[in-house]
Length: 206
Image 1: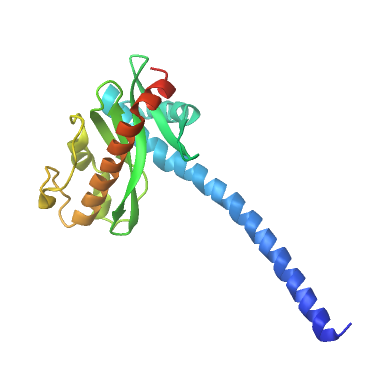
Image 2: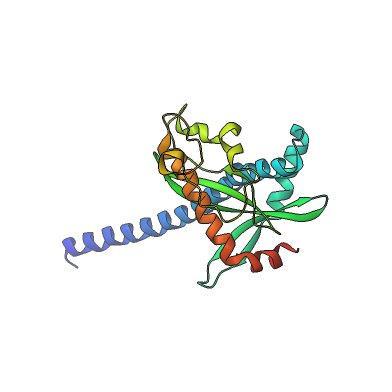
């Protein structure tokens, strides 16, 4: 066999094996990353909403709560074959609210927001921030309770916007883009809740 052809075959074989190994590694890494985001970003955001409904808790109680939420995550099968992740918040042992996550376009990329809805009324019970890549000291302040509390106990059917855009939400000073992203994410969750409210109620065990 011609040495040039032999070399091409060897190089092609090496490239194929490397591609397969990298593909497998990426798949393993992707699953690990997704699990870490769920455990360390999404679950704490749900716990923030849970505490808005049921009051603050000790560090030990918070840890137990987060472990229970992780074990009780639920999925709703959608018409397009995909699944919607949601969590049930209980009050006095009874399903009271659920949370849905969506994202808006922040200054540093996608900004994830978990939004809580009262099952019976559809009212907003609160929000938690999941993932963000905003400017430290500015956009990252959307995680602070003084900003998040604006979205607690709001009537259903609202289209939320910052005051610059004609809404009622006080934006973080110097971080209007991040504040808008939060509103955008919440509005997307409001639409999703409206669309799937009946199915969510059934799946939540209410």
